[in-house]
Length: 115
Image (cartoon, rainbow, N blue to C red; front, side, top):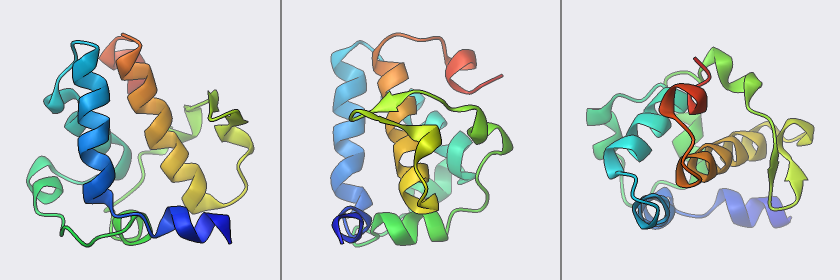
């Protein structure tokens, strides 16, 4: 039941928080967008067209394709190992959280994007 509440969160409400977190650490909105596009397969233009009412469930359901290297994302977010999360949608959300955390910590983009 708790997952349903997370899945219902509007992407448009969380996106500015991702950008703020990055900018507080001298990173850019463009880097946040690049991470989101890399993970989800959205183009930058598609990302800008996402409806204000789109929740996480719809955001990831409509994503063109999860990047094949997303399985390489490992680590802890909110005290939980992302690779151990069983629910596929929650894992995708936590992948995104983890990538934004890495950006805010100053990690190089090619390492964040698992290249």
